Length: 261
Ligand code: OOG
Ligand code: MG
Image (cartoon, rainbow, N blue to C red; front, side, top):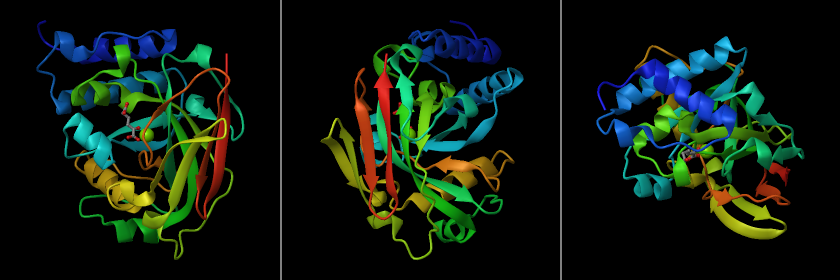
């Protein structure tokens, strides 16, 4: 009990990730941890990873789907950061031995051509500033026992970020209707879940706009060249050794990886 120590909490979560060991959620000991405090832990966690030489590839949005928001009983999505060591090459392998209890979800990623700074950013402004969109598979791996957490817990844990695979085809957003893009997520050739871009707060560009506005409240902005994950379109599906995972996104292409020991 007592007062939450931001620094040691960040170290605890970073160590859990590096040791590939699930841990008791922070709110079991600090039930009063607020969302604001959780973002302070995230900030410390980011500083820690940077000090170890890891580089941010871009921010990610989480809990952007109605299903996850309802499940977590929240109204606002959350954000975290993807680091360079989390990126797996398209068609490559994710090693189960590096992870705890990973799940995969299909997403649309954005690459901005110029900086965007909230408040007041809209989806239309995001689209106008977007250079490319691309398919992505995010592997989430909550550091908490049984993937069970409250909202502040998951924020402190970098929104369960673990690995990401980006598709190699870049598409200019142009007249694409990203809300209507159909998505399937298959494992070993069997469709496990499916959805459409609209699952992400109505349109994936809205997710980027919300992120710009959330960062804007902290005096931060989205930068040109950032690769931004907009949030799961499909549900998250458990992974097992031997799985071959493929997502197909209508008009955007495919992305996949294998799970090895
Ligand atoms: C939190 C991460 C959520 C998404 O796309 O919704 C996320 C979790 O469900 O563990 O990455
Ligand atoms: Mg995600």
